[in-house]
Structure formats: C-alpha cells, structure tokens
Image (cartoon, rainbow, N blue to C red; front, side, top):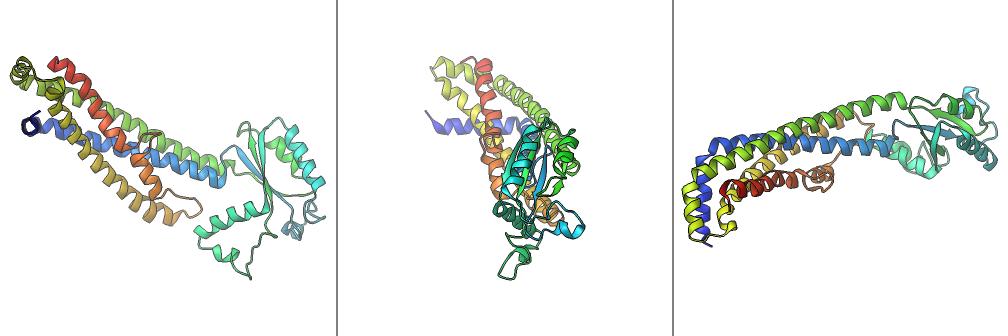
Length: 318
C-alpha cells in the first residue's frame, strides 16, 4: 500500500471539503462539550448523595453523654448515651413503619469523620483537630440514615421516633435536597438532550461529507477498483478524514471542559458553595476517557469513524 498516495488523498479531501469538515468539527466541539458537562453533573450528583444523603433520606441523631438537647429542655436524652435497649426500640419503629424502605446505622466514628470532612471544606476543620478540639468523637452523635419509599411520606416515621428515649433530633433535609437535585437533573438532562441533537446533526454532516467526497472522486475510485485496489486502500482516506475531524473536535471539547472545570467549578462554584463536595480533575479525566457513560475521547471518534466506515461501503461500492 502506497501511504504517500493515501496521505495525498487525505490532504486533497480535507482541502476540497474544508467548509463541511469545519462544520462537523464545530458541531462535534459543541456537542461533546455538552456531553462532558452532563457527565460531570452526573458525577457531582453522585458525590452529593454520598456526602449528604439523597432526597429519600432522613437522619436520626442519637443521644450522647451530656447531650446538648438537654439544655434545650428536651428529656429524650435524660439517660445520657443511648442504650442498647433504646436502640432496639428505635429499630423496631423503623422496621414496622410502612414509610421506610431501609435504614442504616452510622457509628459515632463514621459520623464524626463525615462531619470533619464537611467542615474542613468550610475552613472549620480546626474545631475537630488536636488535643483541645472543640468537637470530639465522644461528643458527636451516632445516627440512623433512613431511606423512605417516597419523599412525600415521612410524617408517620418522624412522629413515631421523635419522642423516643435516646433520639436527640431528626434532620429532614428533603426540601433542601429536592431543590439541589432538581437543579442537577435539569442541568444533566438538558446538556445531554442538547448534545444528542447536535451529535445527530454531526452524523448527518458526516454522511453528507462522505457522499460529496465520494462523488468528487468517483473517477479515481473507479480506476482503483479496476486495478484491484483493496477495500481498505480505497476507504482509508475517508477514514483518516473522519479521524482528523474527530481529533480536532475532541481536542477543542477537552479544552472547553478543562476551562469549565477550572473557572466554573474550582474558581467559581466551589469557592462560593463550600458545603458541597465538588467534582475534581479525576472526574474531569473520567469525562474524557470513561467507559460508562463513554467519555468524549471515545465518543468523538466513534461518532465519525463508525458511520464513515458504513457509508463508505455504500457510496464507493467496494
């Protein structure tokens, strides 16, 4: 195979259909950028669920020794640290409630570490550190994370456990979490729908580019067919054109996504909203090279090479 001829055909094809290739590159750039943003938003939602719990959860804080609730006039913690019998009573109510899907016990150490990580992002980690720490594991409550069957029904289980001995407080974060996840859902699906429409446009542009290129080279293709050129030899210039446009489109999208990660997330939202864990450069790398959902480095070439390979066989009849 004469590679010099193949690259000569590649240069000719890129120059001959320059405007079409530029249109494909711009469409790929915008659509892949939106797809990457959608992946980052999805990973942000996962991080938020891991950190704060999802919109179907409530948190039941259990009593500790010298619990602060006593100073508020609540008698649930009069016996001090929650006893095994009191824990069994709480679990009986959770198991009997028709509103509860499942529940998970979080130890004092696990709860303390979660609180420490949250406060460290707010520059309040010093409260949890050192020998003179204001907050210690002993002072921090263990808890139950209760997953509801539906976010609309929790009044029954809340009223059933809030008066039990050993229960210090109940944190119902559904209203706040519903707002956060609502915004994330709109951003995620909005970016994916937008990228899907633009990727469809890119596919149509790839098809038109191949058709025009094949018609422009029909004489050369006919001669190569007569002299016994292989299918790969004839199709290779078309595949290389598709690969070049894909590489440029992916490169531009990766740059735009990096700019979004740096100025939009790290220098923007992460500086202003400190109580949430934010996506980092590892998540950015997953948006580029992840497998499920596929990253833009995989998605870009697939969207150009696969249709090019299929349509080339149709238009050049090899």
